[in-house]
Image (cartoon, rainbow, N blue to C red):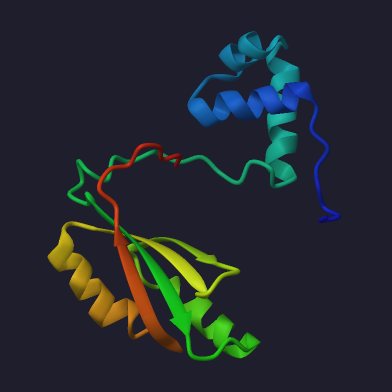
Length: 153
């Protein structure tokens, strides 16, 4: 278990829950919703930011409205799984903008990627030119998503 865990009480959890739903909520309204006044709410938010529990605020974008409706999950098997090879893959995959998520997996394959593109032709290009060209990639298997039932950003 990590030693840098931040102790969180019920107010902290309530703040995080509210901010996850609406990152633009005012401190006054946030305090009202969780049962604290504005000043202690702001102090708690600052502590959560300073300790790294809150890592930032961002806009949630609709990828479908942006022309990025095609989602594929890609199993990646590496030809080498020594630490240097893993680090080389990790560094290189960060430079592929179509890869939304990359997870090292304890399975028959090494990584699982979530790839978002405009369509299947665009995905084929990304697979051929970028994913397959990543360091130490031995093989890939693709699973195309038909519908997103639940996504959390």
